[in-house]
Length: 588
Ligand SMILES: Cc1cc2nc3c(=O)[nH]c(=O)nc-3n(C[C@H](O)[C@H](O)[C@H](O)COP(=O)(O)OP(=O)(O)OC[C@H]3O[C@@H](n4cnc5c(N)ncnc54)[C@H](O)[C@@H]3O)c2cc1C
Ligand SMILES: *[C@@H]1O[C@H](CO)[C@@H](O)[C@H](O)[C@H]1NC(C)=O
Ligand SMILES: *[C@@H]1O[C@H](CO)[C@@H](O)[C@H](O)[C@H]1NC(C)=O
Ligand SMILES: *[C@@H]1O[C@H](CO)[C@@H](O)[C@H](O)[C@H]1NC(C)=O
Ligand SMILES: *[C@@H]1O[C@H](CO)[C@@H](O)[C@H](O)[C@H]1NC(C)=O
Ligand SMILES: *[C@@H]1O[C@H](CO)[C@@H](O)[C@H](O)[C@H]1NC(C)=O
Image (cartoon, rainbow, N blue to C red; front, side, top):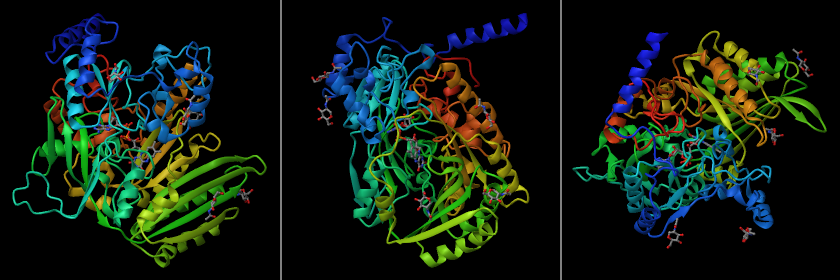
């Protein structure tokens, strides 16, 4: 015991002596915090775009309570469009609060509890240009500030917020430019590599789809309105309904422009800064610099089929429902071979007020570049085997769309429903597993043991296979497990604003210690998708990046030697506490 103590004291001594910066970030209570004059100078350098931030909910709390203003934001609190534009808000309210310090400022919280700043940044640099970003980055480095890159605030791991931080808010960088002959910077022969769209850091998916649709083009991007197209989504890999057709979003990046930790604005592509280009394609948001714009490959748009299916069983889920799930999962490789992609929602525990209990799986699949006859043909054997199970009702419908753009026009409606607490746990499951003899039954027995709060689905994302698998030799830092994946499973959990901290912790801990490990045991060597995962993921380095972690770690040291860009469960974050505020002893 004594020896252990001695050893750990020694380690702390070593950590204090490391040459790459102070142990903790500077906080507002310390003399190192920039003076008013310094903040004013930063403000001037970014053309007056520095904002002192308060959590949006502050008008709903005494002594700053304001009836009209509070009513106003209460009406908007689930609106992700509004949330994306507010430096003082995030999409998932658990990341606005700082439970350890009992600081929160919930819009729907008790008016008498004073508004605490929580994890909302103190200042926001509302940047319009790369130069603004350069000034903010240099300022944060010079003053040893906790720096946060915040785009839409959708992050599920809390990577776009941190206590007592300076925020770089990229939301207003909305440029969208098309070309049919994109020439990457630094390419010697100046020959074009094809058609592409260049988008600013703040462009959101609905905006991208609208622009791309007008050009009769298609682009690989996520299934959401307000998630950012150029920020955390793509830096973490980016899965898409069009992935099985054209690959992961990162497979289709031609070039990034990025402000580095040293404050330089540089280009990363196949011809210059190739190592950074590799790291940015999957290494995770907020880690290797601030991306100012991304160039994505575009494709001629093509007809697309949407197939809907409901598998319904009346009453509480019994073995008929789970037999159906086993058959469904066993059939997924066949659907994948027919070109299917999409999402399914398993809800074994729905309660309809005027109806009663229901177990249902709701499926929405797509067949890109395809026609309705072949989609229906691919589904037919599954429909008959499900119909043979007593007690199941199967409804199927399909629809031919002229192009992928109209899919987004019909299914995406401006806003995403956010503004609640959301924590996720997830796992990538391989095609090999689905095809193995006991795969579908083992999977189903685990799905059956998970807890389903009423109306909360476990979601299966059929977003890999096809071209995602075929692209296995593309050199990107994306988790290599994606190339073997067929389905990305996501469990979500939440709680109310007034749920006691101990109960919040037990929900979170159950996810981390019980539920995610149940899925993980299916295939311990696969992994999880960094953008939709448990913020407390164990052994996150291996889960999120597999064999790519070592190189990512070395490149992190190269491109950010003083660890300016630290995010929860990000590359290099093992040397920091969870908020990225103080260094801790970590693996090296
Ligand atoms: C409703 C919804 C739907 C989703 N659908 C999909 C989907 O279809 N496919 C999919 O793959 N994922 C999906 N996601 C997950 C999504 O990819 C992540 O939430 C992602 O982190 C969002 O990135 P953002 O830039 O919009 O958000 P933010 O929270 O602002 O940023 C996320 C991370 O990226 C960093 N970051 C942001 N901008 C930059 C930049 N310019 N330079 C450097 N770092 C930056 C931030 O620091 C943070 O670490 C969805 C999420 C939600 C909430
Ligand atoms: C920054 O400057 C602008 C314009 O002068 C001003 O409106 C704003 O309040 C300043 N921001 C801060 C944090 O002082
Ligand atoms: C409420 O919102 C509307 C529309 O966004 C705005 O015009 C109005 O000024 C707001 N009212 C208050 C009291 O904030
Ligand atoms: C499951 O419940 C449904 C609806 O009540 C019923 O028709 C079916 O027979 C049940 N299945 C089994 C295996 O009990
Ligand atoms: C599946 O159920 C949903 C919700 O009840 C319904 O809107 C949809 O039309 C159903 N789909 C099919 C194919 O029946
Ligand atoms: C933890 O998860 C297991 C498995 O899903 C579930 O049976 C159990 O009820 C959960 N416990 C809590 C406290 O949520």
